[in-house]
Image 1 (cartoon, rainbow over the protein chains, first blue to last red):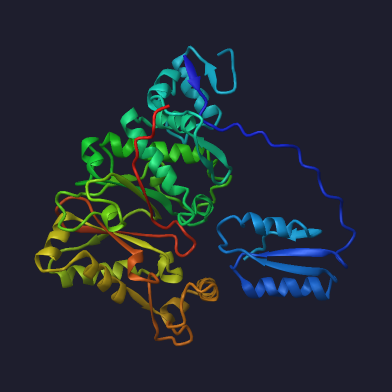
Image 2 (cartoon, each protein chain N blue to C red):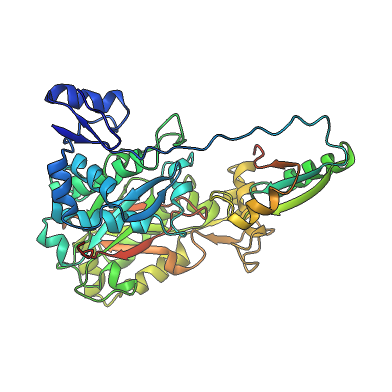
Length: 88
Length: 358
């Protein structure tokens, strides 16, 4: 029998890992705000700025349960670090 | 087994082939019809097998017609079912349905497919007694084909990307038809802008059906319906979104005989299926947090005073978000299928098309 395969055999290109950071001071950090807990996200942003000296840029996802738009991902990717999720 | 290649395997032993689907994680826990090339080619029926409906969330396998046909064969479909499977997948991949979230949420919603139009009767879909149950190939096979496509192409697998806390049996198959003959009102797809007599599929991510004892005068039926729709445990009460009410043909007839249109029933439900803010707050901080998040993102307009504990909050932001269909036997039961809340899973309707042949 010639049995057909039901899955999509995705081949991913190898990804190059980013170099380890020595610290966040002076680094541009993107926070992706998923709208689930705005006060907690704001608290994290404040800690990153005031305690760790990061240059924080905050991006707001239109909907927390759907992937970010491509334009948002591309803008966040210009940062040294991107925080893409925080615990509720 | 020999001669493995990219899109098929040569296997001569039937039992070995069935077991192989389990071993490779290509089935959802139930055995499948083996997708032989002959059956898959018959399903594709000359269409462009490489045409894709796009990447299926969450893992992004391409929904090519060939891959969908393979999963349709596995689910037990015949070629005449295939356009319905394609339409359902198209509908599930619309932004408002947010399939990415639906397949990965901790909530127990599953995308229900509702078939409308003459095709439902022509293919013997069940729309009457036991409509959410077993016994009908079309409901079962189309429903399972959809779920297998989400499983195999989307990679929505429990313990992996599917984070449903409890889920429900609709993960295996969740497909019904609306009863259009024994129904005094226009069917769902016509309400949603499609021509009477056309064929369409509507998908809506929801919990399993909750039974509602629904009998008597319109006022008596509405009394039970409103209470059931705004149960404190469902997401709608806390986050809005959409909900689905299934009235049986006798319920609908009783409403219509006394002059109630479907929209009047819907309006009544929206105005009366409400909970006080103090009730909602009594559920705890997480619920309140969700509610605040919804307000901050503009999903709850400020006409609902969320600082006043006596405010009665509706289950959906607007009446149109309460979907009503007619299905089931002529008895005393209706059902509500609460949605996922305002995260998505919203109803999306797509016409069933015979795709152009290659």
